[in-house]
Length: 201
Image 1 (cartoon, rainbow, N blue to C red):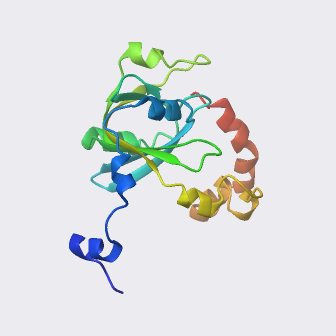
Image 2: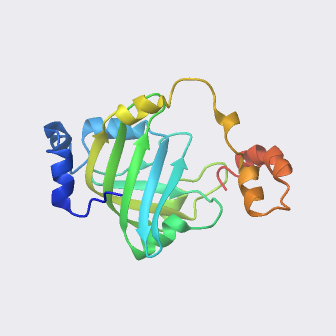
């Protein structure tokens, strides 16, 4: 094992940053970045807390966040499994990163900043749909934003090729691996419909 143990060693190994990777950074929302984010229905929310890091996928059937102004975004927290990993982290450490993806696009857009959890009824009600209202809204304040090089998605061919979902374990398989007497097949049979019914729960 040849472990890198210093920033100087790391920078010597890789060399200087590509100039465009530095000039592309924005400190506030620009028209192009806003257009991109307004079309993103999927984002990965990354947080940090005493137990370590966490990355949580978030999605919607329209814009996954609402751009409020040049530095503020609102992300409704639709109910999930109630682990609350991301929310616990935000309460204890406000540092947050967002990674937006648009289907078919090889670029991603990354935002770094900080966030708070807001339960103001006027704010949560603004996101109500199908008689459901999020219990809270993550209010994100932007420090920096930039697009990510397309190489990773191009290498993975994420948006092309055949459906590979049959090659990997199902949700029921994962649970059964942890709990031997769990009926994974029955769980999987009803999981998609259950998730659909509770999409805005």
